[in-house]
Amino acid sequence: MTPGVGVNAEDLQEDAGSVVETNDGNELVLSWLESTRDAEPVEVIRYEPSARLLRIFPMVQRGWPGGLGRQFDELTEIQLDIGATQWDPENHTGEGDNGHLQAIGLPKGFESTYAFGIGIERGFQGLFRKIEKLTTFTLVRIVAGAEEGEADGVFRISVGRFARWVAAVKTNRQRGSTAVRRVNEAESHNLLADLLDLERVEPAFRRHPLINAITEVVATGHLLGGADRGSLVAHMAQVAPVVAQEDPVQFGQLRQDVELASLKVIIRRFNEGLSSAAGNAEDYWQDFFRAYPFALQQLFSAPVKLYREHLHVRGSNAEGRGQRITDFAYVNPVTLSTFIIEIKTPATPLTSTSSYRGASGSGSEAYPPSPDLSGAVAQVQAQVASMREDFPDLKRRTPGLPDDIDPHDVHGAVIVGRVGDLDSGERLASFKRYRSGLAGVTVIGFDEVLERLRGLHAMLSNPVDVDVEDGEVDEAPPAARPRARRLPRNGERASAGGDAGAD
Image (cartoon, rainbow, N blue to C red; front, side, top):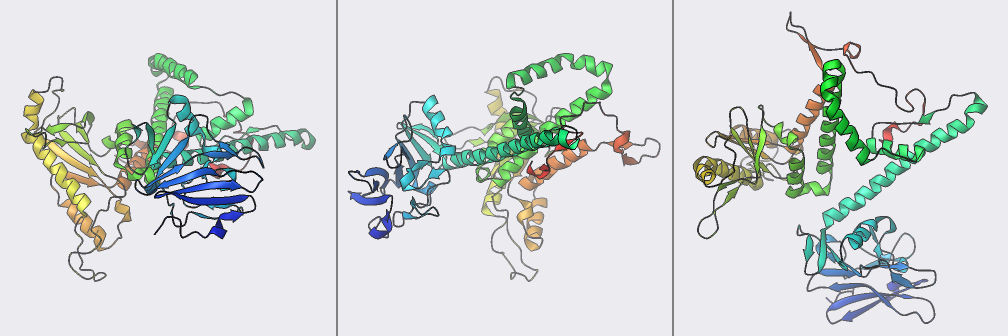
């Protein structure tokens, strides 16, 4: 079917103008023609079916009426892999909620109204203006795959990266609105304070550090910057030995607060990965565990440290094949035991969709592990075997590798899927039987990793007291726990606003 034949000509007209559909060879061309005298069609979209490529020529309305002009100074074209959109050449245009003709199926963050100019919405242009500033590219392509960066004169970014940008802008807008509302609520209270015989208040500070920072900027016009924070940290490092000796209680509390803050960041980032499309890619979790190795250390009931990332445990043959490479290799610095870790994604299924034996709902069905899970386990088992058999020789031929590792005492682990997504019946039981029957390889779900981190945070947040005489362990009441004194934060005595839930 010829591209565009599913759209009727009368459906491509509105009061402001019309969408002109033409064919250039086998390519579909869409232009915008304003309903003003002497107006000329302006090409805004071109579809190349052979390359499955949607080419957007970003425009913006320069005046009404006044015609469309280029949206960016240097960027002339934004390309989209069709797989990164829901755009359909046979149903490409329709009437939007605003009464204007719109391009159907463009990703969120794109301006889709022809009369306003097809391109990037005003609030999301910053990413492309930054590309203009930092590079010399005039073409940007949003790709469905993972290959990003420069290629054939085009700067490529993945649709997942663009989606993260759009989501970040929206989140920051909401945070900014929350901060402005807090300041305005304090201002309104203070303007009436002398008339109603009330005390003046400061803007409310809640839990979220970024909203608090924005609130500080709106209220005072300044913020402790990165350089200032760096100087503060450097000063803390210098005085830490003195504080530890002069006031060990205060120093211990400070250290615990820092550990809790770090752990909260890890938990928040982990949650973001579980709840976003970006977390469905293995590369996301490779980057996460590289940035926060502490999260991996919680999988083992022993002290561990990173030995190597992407450790080669078996070399290639004469044809350059047969290599075995781990995601991460950790080592116990005390026993020198080795731990090989394979990272999958939270979306990886843990069991097959259909039972191997027994009718569904009968209570007798058995579910084999999914091919992705069994394949990952087999891969780790092969890496464990190569660690014992092949790695000692590789290590001898690789100068600079640390000696603090025992390649014969090796354990494997696979982080994969979500155990909580399994129903509580035979599917879960089948998975648990499979997992417990594995020798030398531990399988743990992403949700189980998160719960371990949360449990550790809860434990650090609520220390316990141990009665040495009777061996009982009791949680210390808050009043009994020695804490360092601190000054009240702005608004703690009397704060305006009831937006605690906004954080």
